[in-house]
Length: 491
Image (cartoon, rainbow, N blue to C red; front, side):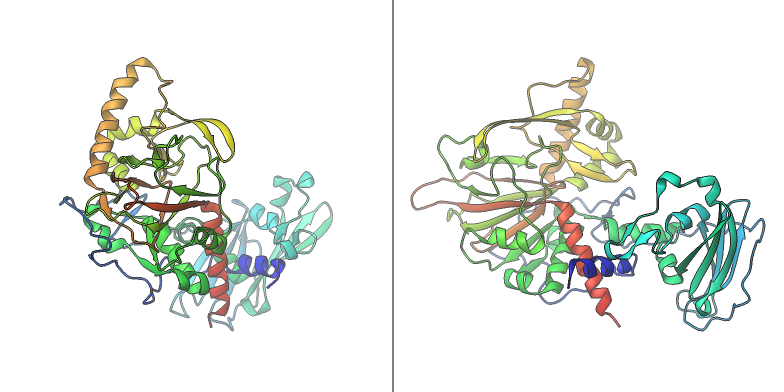
């Protein structure tokens, strides 16, 4: 498929009805408690009932009720073609001049063909999104309307609205300085861009950022999924399921990768491309003398997120185990859901949550590696919250937290107390397991906090891990492309 056709297909599909993890094949399952993973969980704490920004591992999302429809103040046009001939059709249309909105009555919505619902679209938005050749370039799915001449007041002047194409399309005529401009919108296109709250929430959940499913230590075995490396590389359906599980749970195990140093690159190329840092594109994690990074020591590696000193830090870690320590104890992965820990604080210790989400911390890294000498500094809270209240990023790394702490002096000790509580909950909710050669542990670097127990590095007992990063922009993009292709093939 050409790039232009792919973009056009994706544009048509966005707003469809695909859902998070709608289908699971036999290639994905909850990981068993077996010798390979040997999960250790001493916590009896149950999964959190979230604050609304995330879902817990056992909860199901329920849609919010839609707001009551407002009455029309003035009708300025109505089509005589009101008899629907398709499952969903416009039965009536009017223009509310007082609020400058086009109001549609649509029948055949949901599972009842005689059910009628009302949809409203601002006139200025309709004009801005006119699909005619003068205003929209279909080949690139791009608006080309000349905004230097765009006048919001003029765009409110709707001359006529009418139902066309047997109820399947809306026609709007605009009075523009003595000229009439004609816009035609397909009903399905409009419904996918509905301004009703439940519809916009569904779009954001399914096409922008699916909701994470948070988990504590007690729920780890329930959420961990396994996928075959060969199937992820060969089958788009399995690739999509891996990405969806990674988005939902933050950590996924891929099994059966060949024991070469190129497999992280092959997996990254399946999605997009590797994210390069000053440690290179792929990096080797094994004991090194004279290292500039504590990850390259055999001593215990404290729980952390990678590269908190990057403004746009890598989003996803790929850690491929080539050789594993044979010690009965040591060399085990540690991982915890940082979003779960943050929600614990938000619900049960709101003052600590406020301190850790509002206080800017200095993160830094200084050294030399593949890219030469570097000195990185970034300031951000431990818990990063978006404008909508959703958790966006966790920053935590004891070695990379700078001795410079650029905050008012009376905030220092309260921050340390809040951070102590965060770390205490983090370790309470952490799980430990050992990856085997051929495993690729994939996890979110903006959400998961990970570490490693120490091990004795000798000639007969080594540990060899190859790592790489992916950016979430590329992961989300790949998921949308896969969903668009799947929807196109759905009857």
